[in-house]
Image (cartoon, rainbow, N blue to C red; front, side, top):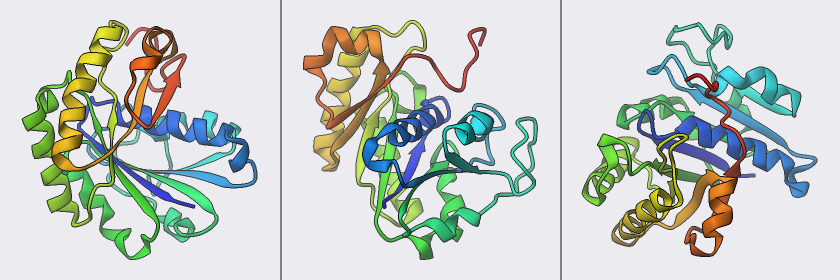
Length: 223
């Protein structure tokens, strides 16, 4: 099975994508007998991390590796549990959730020697200051590849304005990211969006696949 490495700026919705992607894989009939593992390697941002959903993820058969001292949501200690590396290349799916920004790839130092069949995706949000233009997105892609020393294999459009997101937001961001996709020669692998919005514009989504959600996993309604 593949290893998926997911990068993106803080606020891009990278970890939200990771959790929903893992849940979606777990529902795939072809994955019924395979393990799905999330490796949360975020030691930069102490909140909105995939490890915060450990209890729910465990309940549906997804194991979470995060802090070496446990996955307590209030824990802000930069120690990581790399026990998941023994599962890379085995008959299971490992999703690596990097910390936000280019510096997040530093956590891959202990992972490189295990990588075999992998995907490395950049999650892009056209409504964040770091990636609101094609030029900024391309710079981020260039920096990710230079810092990580491995090539990206795809892009994810996770452009959103939280609960104010509209169909127009999705289509406008898609236009920019398709421009980036062509310039960087990287396929647009996924678009992540709320189900009601997708139902309005399903025929206009240009990514290879869509990842739909009915509710956000890492935000409470008051946030």
